[in-house]
Length: 476
Image (cartoon, rainbow, N blue to C red; front, top):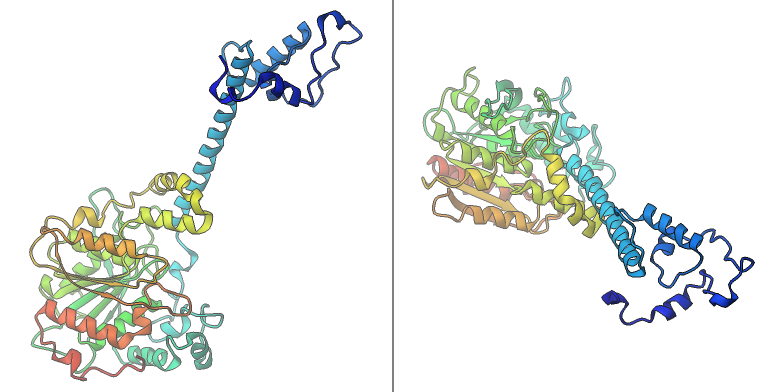
């Protein structure tokens, strides 16, 4: 019987179209002088699978030897159908090997990209760099003129801000820190249960702005965690520090391990849920206990909250879920699944081929550290004590898309999870940047929302959030 894929064809017609094969001579006309010339250049696979190729004994022997070398069989098929199946099998096997190697290669690249520390993670943290001169010298979203390190003129900032932000606001950030009484402090991260190392962390403490105190005793505090390729000397944390401090809260801004002026890890990787939450919790312990007396004294655990951006949002949500005494968390553009982000970033580069490599990328990324060792889906359930969560999302975000926001909301929808107090969903594009830039583009509205949320969490009067008593911000 013919293989099913050959049934529509005549084997003799197929032979006639194989123009590079000499037609078979009649037996009575076959002589030594008429022996077929050597088939130089004829592919071995073609000799093995073309039907109807008959010739001398030497020719048949050559075909068998060729088939044996091409076909990974214990015994080479002698029939046309057998050689056809063998050739098809070899082609399928070679294709499968090619796709496997492609997937492994793409996975290696994708997995390495999500865990490789960028060169910029320690930028802006050298000698003499402080919050006073940080915002003007660091990278800012914009065209050529602001997306570099170094002091920028007002004209450059206005040009690259392009209506998203301006030199007046950037100068106000510098001036605010110059009079804020900030301090550099150091603390240790918490030790992790799976061998996560204790690392020395550097942080900036920003006291609440003068005249914003509410009630007796030390002001409540918020620990701010930066995001990917940032540190506590870059714009994410520096602007958040101004907004929180001017709203009447103490602010502790650490750099995670391997970032800024903090210590190095024992793995040198961008480690996500493996050990970053223990850095945040070490900073939270410091903010709560004030061991060096720089914050005005110890406060109760329910007076210290967490805030983070992007990867920092993922980190503070994890830390919040792990430490049940933290009263609330504010997460701006938080990642929910690192695995999803790997697939998203690979699709941007190689399109549909990302599907072949994403599983290998995830396996490669987790070789040394477990990126989801702590994960919102693991740590949030089991707590219905009224602790509060606030989420910020930009629907135009190309880095952490809406699907990540939706998954975080879903994870918080169960009765046994903390309370999702509110969400702020607002479109924002700042010089083609759509990721974690709402507080840069709309600082006044952002601060008012921060103030209303944290005063509710800490049981304070909300009057100062809306009555104009906070300092004016020179931007919308």
